[in-house]
Amino acid sequence: MITIYEPIYRPEQVLSEKSFIAYPHTSNDKFKKWREFRLHIEVYRAKLYENNKLTGIFSPKFGLKTHLSGEEFIAYCQSASDADVVFVNPFPQMRYRSYNIWMQAESNHPGITNCAQNLLTAAGIDIDIEKQPRHDHKTLAYSSFWVGSPTFWEQYVGGLLEKLAVFIEHNENHPAVVNALVETFHTDPTPFLPFITERLFTTYLSLHPELKVSSISLDPLDFCLMEAERKFVQSIIPEIDRADQLGSFSPELVHRMEEHCDALAQAARVHFRDTPHPHTGRTIT
Image (cartoon, rainbow, N blue to C red; front, side, top):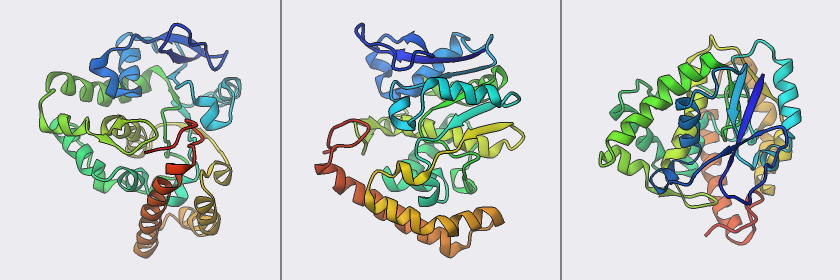
């Protein structure tokens, strides 16, 4: 069985996807800043994944961000019968904007890479962010729209996210924890922490090529949020696709991607000061 939970935050809230299962989530100010990270920890600790073939917990904005229905996603999962994990990346254009998920992270949330590394190191998690390879469509995922097998939940959530959660819970005043809870630029006030943990999914996949991973392919041009972004992505698609096919990115190309990633992040800050963001309907101040 493929089970996808959807968090219900308010009594009047209704499921956005009829094929998902309501997951009542009582607000707890202590963990409010954790966002989806906390949901994965709760599902793991309650062992809600144990009796399912694949399990996930998706934001109510799943349809808005992916342009897919829950039924379509589940149907795809059923076709990927031997997968350990299945995901959809609602920002497919990002693989043309940045070499990997951490390059984009640093452009959009300056300081996050150092913050993430300090937190991982303090928690005793052996991941070197600077050594992360190229992230392409086979591993790249923004947002937490993934479902995993019981083994994947034990290995990824239990072996990595739970270890991080326990460290944070027991070391609230540690500098690495305090810094991870500092707010960064986003459509809503949000600290570094959920952006760090969201990116650990892609990071983990890139470190474990033995996993059977399946992802839904989306057209990158259909998901660009600004015309400037669309023009850049359209212009560079052939070059990036060629580099991915060859498995070789020149230092010059990586540097150029970083420059454009920084420029587009700055352009987005300016653009959405006056233009409502499509995922919230609000401007970003």
